[in-house]
Length: 465
Image (tube, rainbow, N blue to C red):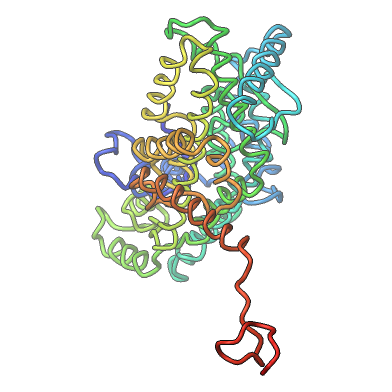
């Protein structure tokens, strides 16, 4: 999958994963400001530059956006503009095929998990429909991140520097919604070309109870797999139906995933002292020709120097570990129940499951979404460890005890538990035995003490001699 910059996460933590030529996506401009100031290099005000861009024809309307930190009208326009050339509306046959595949998937899943169906209606969305229908879910996830990033940027600049930047500093806050709207729109447009379902990014994005397939992307996914199209569609429908069951009947799960992202956002801060040092160095000529507030290229050099990089706190690292663990547990459970449902019914299940694993390893929608949102790289080993937990739980304790772990967040494996997944599964058996012993003890009648007025050696209740 292409590296699409939502623009919120810090630069890639692993230097080996950084690709040459990625520019500010992996460098010192995590907020995408380089694009704005780079456009100013030819002269003119930000309004002049934006006025020359087709999507900004209604500049006044965009700049007056008051719906939140992200201009979602612009994001939608940008995404749909990207998709227009290759747009294919879903046909009636595709809608029927999606409905049949999702219904059959639910029947198969009924036999491998006690979690009931989470699908009340089915849909076959085009790419444009995917953008439009998932926008409310994206807004709930991204708005707090964008709001925190804008607040961190505007509060971090020293007062003297803000005054010297003049009109640029004055419009930074107003440009936030436009800037993020354009970035989010680009990212959603790219995702819409690759997602197969409404849960492909690791979170349910469709309206509650709606199972979704994206036929145009399914057809592209099936190319070269050497499997019948109906089989590929059913395999993907199984994954969508399994995810829908989990999120519909584990009510706290969606909120906990979202809370982990927002916990990361709350910790976004920028080192003001580092900015002051960088600006002082720039003003003294330590960065090329020095900082000239009237020269956009010098501002871009400052942005590229890394002084605006957010610093990751221990609390943010904890939020990322929790987010990674939950995402791995969701994906591992889906893999496990789909394998149980399809192994004896779907001839190409093994090959399709391997294709899905490779897709994740190379950066599928879920991996790329969280990499660009919060800089989280989902590790293939963590996903395998989670699948090991669910598979071993089912084999050793049965599907009921396996799925019982979803009844409360405290019952789920932690990040440390996933380091030794089989030890966690073994402990579940010990916990069950201990619970059974405790129950047996509670059922036994309590031994009665002799009455206080009985003398030692006398039969309880006998009269004194």
